[in-house]
Image (cartoon, rainbow, N blue to C red; front, side, top):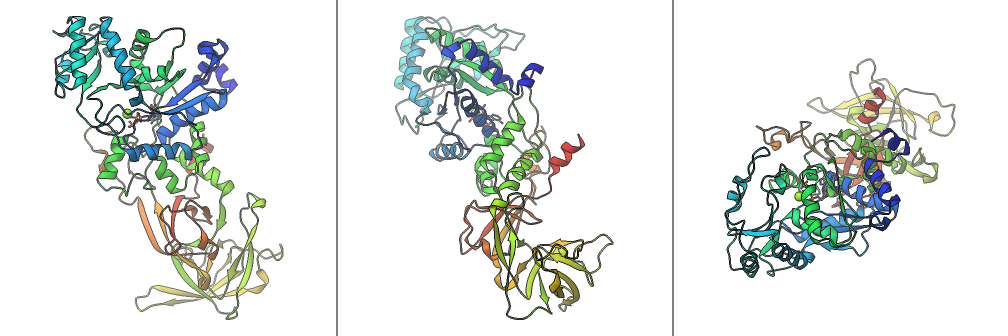
Length: 562
Ligand code: ATP
Ligand code: MG
């Protein structure tokens, strides 16, 4: 970003768009598209691209199309199309009635290919794809001219039509653009436009047995949809001259789409290609594309991320021209920031240790008031039951504590959040010496909120009333990989870095009773332990909570140091 752009608070793509608008290029329109290939679920990198494409037309006024790049019939499935639509909507973007498919353009693409043949700009090559690859040369050495390059237009047209009619088997022939076998840009060395593939296509069924290559289909699809700014990732920069070449052959009038490249999003401790994510799913490392450990949009959603947190993250990451790796801590920071404002505070005990408060009356339940979110008074207050028997988390008690342990230990006092100060009087153990229960006393003068002159103790613990608590399963997650860049090694498979401890299931958790009606995707802060969300497959018979993130913000720490 230049200094001037930086001051205006816009990225380099916005600067290009603003310039095009001011020069009235393409009549000053802004029309973008998000073009996923439906061969897997979308990941956080796609989310970046979605936010960028839809964000531009939200900002400048215009339209964004959803276009499925379904030119590869063997890999694409309906399930993926559905999931992609769901994910884009969930992020909060609307393509209205512009749901398009590259396959809708097969006939037009075919007509343009015939046009190129008739103009002597494309030819049928009988070499195999392997032979073609082997004779392309190197950037400093020209490629070898195909023996079929000088076929007559009539012969090319006849062969191409017969390719389309299904006369030849897979791989027997291809259609190539006739550009320049000596070009320093390898992509211009007579690139393949069509290949023969006798395969069933989801949408066009058995209508076609030749399929266009990405480079040929993409720009022409942009053209058909009157896209103005075709945004893609950096690896396509070297394809741009070809993108423009194809358009030059077919475009009439002034309108022209413009390809703009930006750096793809990479995240530390993550893999981000659909192919690798697919391996994790198929080989059972995770329990599906929406496993909460996955960097997929559906996984993040199931984990408890909000659409706003992902959009904010995308904004913070910015738009770069050079490849870089974003710290996954920034993503976690974004969801904390959002949930801190929105999530109701509740109490849940993950590893329960029972406490009996011996001087508290039997058969009494007090309803104590507590604030739902100290960050937002308007979220109100609620009542939580308190009684003679409660649970605290086992790691909040130590029989033989170090000096600075401010939680509970023999003879010491702590405050129970929104309740009383208690003191540990005695420990009950089983035959093996395991602690099974604590005997405590409480100080009735220390009821929380009753008066601000309450005496103070150092530690405050979360707790739940034992007879009122509800049971739940809680799933804690850690990073999916033990290495910052698991796919970055030539001699190691990325799965070797799979973190075996990335999932920890706790089945005996005790939660405050207000959570009994929580439904999937409800989000909470369990005080002192993190943000949680009700799992997609949770039911009232079996409540399941996923921990989205812990409360410890490593990103805030890093950025403070800077
Ligand atoms: P993958 O390699 O993960 O399969 P892809 O680029 O093949 O990704 P597509 O479905 O072809 O996936 O991509 C749809 C759009 O999303 C493209 O415009 C692509 O550039 C963009 N995109 C894909 N991955 C990223 C990423 N990591 N960061 C930003 N944009 C991305
Ligand atoms: Mg792809």
